[in-house]
Amino acid sequence: MALEIVRGAIRNNLAVHELRESLQAILDNGTLYFGYPVIASADASFTIEALLVSEDYGLVAFTFPEAGEDLKKTKEDQDLVFYLLEGNLRKHESLRCGREIAVKPNVITYYPSDQ
Image (cartoon, rainbow, N blue to C red):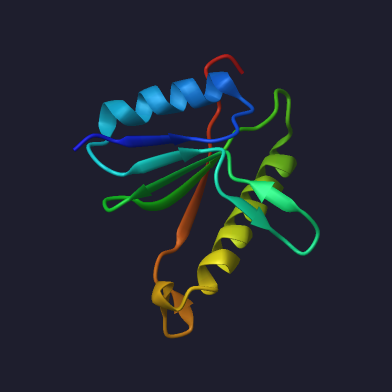
């Protein structure tokens, strides 16, 4: 079975193209969502730039930093994506194991080769 690709609203075409190519070369299964899902926080809605759902790797969210972005901003973005995903997962009883979520999200920042 091949990696399934689902495309939504894409902002960084270069990063999406490179990430897709890289993951298709190493993954045999799973679904890679680009521009999904839109998650709401108390202050605003947020689109996850790339989200991999895989039996082998679990739930992996990817962020694509802006050119020249400093590491503090990158870390803040990673933390935001983690907390938004974790909060969303906690809402679903089938995704909880006692007081914890059954699937822990991972957040990776992907730098395209052009940056």
